[in-house]
Image (tube, rainbow, N blue to C red; front, side):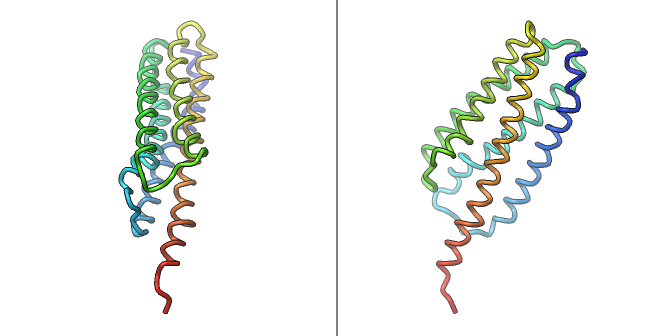
Length: 180
């Protein structure tokens, strides 16, 4: 299929980036494991940390799907459609988790990058998969945009989490320790 073959390099780069970022997230989680434990940290993690890994995983999965030697766009589009719809549902779950956790009060930027932008990306993925049979070229650009939106949202969220723990929680912990 010539239309998909032109995207191989894009998805190799996006998929490799997502895979590397998943690994870095595990390293960061290990490094901050000794930081003070927040109240309601488990629910906060499911609202803010886990979705970042899920979004990177979705990018990796889309890359794998679109690098596979499909006989036509139909089967790949169907799989991407299911992934997009699952992502829309997951975004609603993330929003609910963010509202219910009590460890941190989300601000607009959190809602934007943890809920709204991933929701837009997954909805775009679902809609593009529907359009792929009749408008293949524009649909593939829409899928690429969704992938980049998930990738850059995940990068923002990972950086935001690290800086929060390093500059806010660690400082609070250090300031609360008795001085000798």
